[in-house]
Length: 268
Ligand code: ADP
Image 1: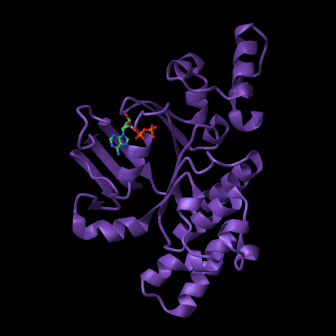
Image 2: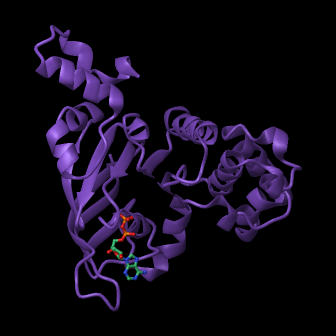
Image 3: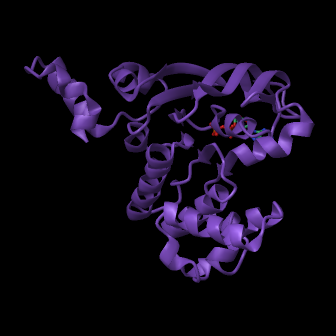
């Protein structure tokens, strides 16, 4: 079933001549793990901000669970259903104590204290941060901070999480911990995930990848479908996962590789 439906989406920033999004059609299914890749300036962040109405189309439609983002009466409902996580966790944490930070959203919803506590505990547990609830965010690592930021969004009980390069500022350990948390939310709790990344090792964990270039979707498919097109991936200035590149080269050299060698799940 479609959770977010985008039709003929066009967008340009106020003082810009060019369309930054130039005719996007995309259906995001309920429970899907969608990854968006594309080189800098291709329009990924702008598209992310369209998904919860932070930006609204100049032309075309973004529909979230039946409501148009251009319908301003629906905007708070839409923002609750589609939560956003950005690159820098320091910009997203507002309180001095982890649990207070996660409580911020539910408090603004006017929930009872017992419900707030329940949501805080569940959200921190979902990102494996329950032990840190009384910590000050500045004493946490980058990956831990980012997981608290994710918990803050989860406490609003969204259907969909949109993550705009959430691992870009993290070390490999932090990156892995955030990816583990995101996977768990998607596969365990059924939350729809839209994940923007430069890391192709993250992209291969998706159900579906879209590649953006100059405000358009230029490639779309499963990780296998995308990464088996090594030449096209390079054309769009993206890295090919090392392991895929190796398999591809061996295959080109005529090495007798089993057909399932391109089954990426088996390679990583
Ligand atoms: P990506 O996330 O793929 O790097 P962005 O969506 O951030 O791409 O940017 C797409 C284009 O829109 C770029 O040319 C960028 O310079 C421009 N852009 C982004 N934000 C703004 C803004 N606030 N005002 C004007 N132009 C912007």
